[in-house]
Image (cartoon, rainbow, N blue to C red; front, side, top):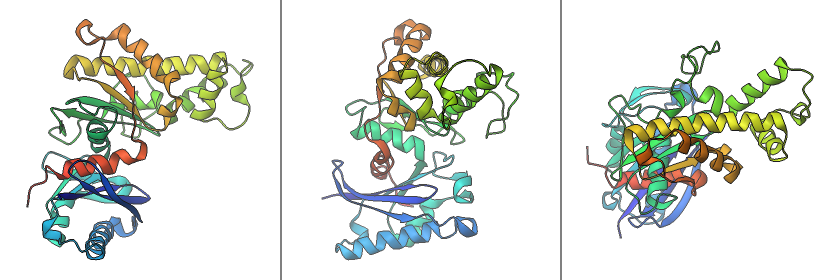
Length: 315
């Protein structure tokens, strides 16, 4: 039975799993992400954990198909990471390091792209060959799958949907250094920022958003309770996301869109609004492209990494 390792490196923990070629998860575990000293201990820790697993289960490392590794940073088609700030990494080749230490082939991809591959393989897009996934959380990530393969782009920046420019007149700076990126408005952080602005601009407007801590969850709960300000904020976010998807459709024309991340917990309340905005703006030929909620949650990363592993080539 062919087996691979799926590895998803996060800022606090590294999630790992062993999978079969059919996508069956045999085991899953996690180890801490040691970001001290420029993240120099992360890959050795991963190697040690994989080797320990192989010993424990009597697996010859040479018999493993390989490993897929998801990294929170831009990764080009050759698997080169061009800096992963949350890990303390500069430009590096983690796949080569892993292969040299273990003898196993390794493939590396951006974590959001890898999650999209997971959804395409075993999640919302199962049975489809192409999709674009948006991950709505603190920021906005994205992943592109075409003909069953990840699209990394020349500089590893394919899928950076959160940094689509939507307002060049925005005075505040995005985390990327630009102004007016989509994630400044349509992420969990972005909708809270918009709410804060609205509350400051009209301090006497009645709204339940003045009660308790302001968060994306609180905004969606208020909107579901028909709070006028919260509804306006959610509609604005949905309109911007629909605009972003319509732009993507005009370039890639994918089989479907998948919405994931923490904000996707708003479910149909958000998805339906995005879909309506998308259909108003999309080119006629792609207007009926389905928009679905992600199904794999936090497991998308290791599942996609496992799928990525089957394309790994010995170095």
